[in-house]
Amino acid sequence: MLFDIPRLRQVTRLGPAEAVTEADLVATGVEPRPGDVALIRTGWPQLWHDPSAYVGTGTGVPGLVPDSASWLAERGVRAVGGDTIALERIEAETGHSMLPVHRILLVERGINLIEVMNLEALAASGVTEFFFVCAPLPVVGATGAPVRPLAVLDGGTDRDAS
Image 1: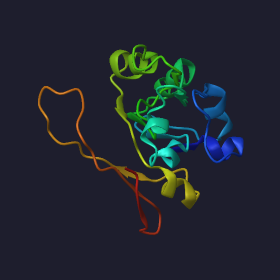
Image 2: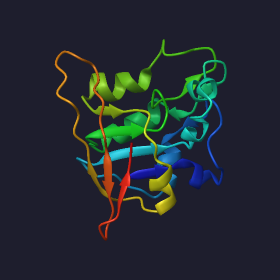
Image 3: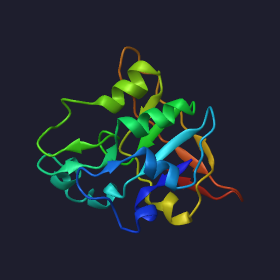
Image 4: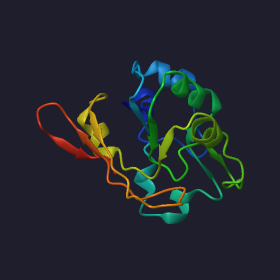
């Protein structure tokens, strides 16, 4: 399931440190079911060419906040992915010292996280539901592994969701 927040807000991309709230997720009209994968688009990969802006150390990065993470967890999603370096909102000058969304989803609920996804082509297709394929490398003892996710759209058209 794709939650296209810039489309909802009628902007090209969210601003630095903007929160993606439960109200935003509900307003998209996308309703995840147990076992679904929820992908959150902020439009942030448009800054990929500028590493300082993309990382957002001085400005912050948009993303999920605790209420939206809890809303997704309550619906039984299997994984949550996003197009930023941390999936969750990072405030300016804060860095990765506080990650409440990681705690809610990964630590408390065992929901896998996928970060640094390029969701631009998928969003441009206009779809919100698709068949999601993702197989991580079997890295033992790690907290993460590279993946190559794919969104398989109806009609056989695939979009790279990495």
